[in-house]
Amino acid sequence: MNIQIRILSVLFTVLLAIVATNVKAEGELEQLLTQMKNERIKEARANKAREKKFKAVRTDQQAILDKAKNKLRAEIARNKQLIDEIALNKSIIEKKSNELEQLKRPLTGMKKSHLNTNIISGLIDKQQVLELPHLTVKSSTTGESK
Image (tube, rainbow, N blue to C red; front, top):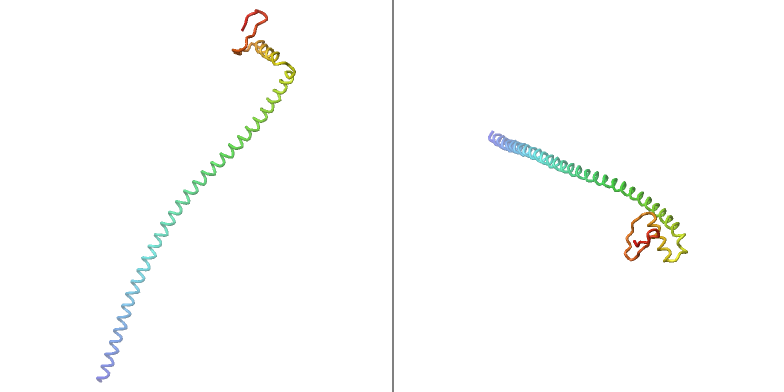
């Protein structure tokens, strides 16, 4: 019986060691589970913070893009307006050049002195005032120098 008690006591000790190990393992498992939950909570918070920052940056970038698109539209409209103005100016210049050529044709055969007299007479006839300090023109009606 002594052997049986000894065997029982050894078995009981082994059983206690196994139970103690299981209890310790259960405690470690609980601790590990709690640690994992805490880590997941931390990761979820970090992910939310990153997502919030990303959305804010995306909103800012979208606003910058919209502003640039609006500015581009305005510049395109301004460019079209300037192109239209250039075309109009070219047609005005061409028209004025043609008018000038028509005015120059009758004058091409005249002498310089005759040309100056005709220009001044034409200005006086139209009652335009022109100050030419180096020229004096005599009026044929009064005989005075002007």
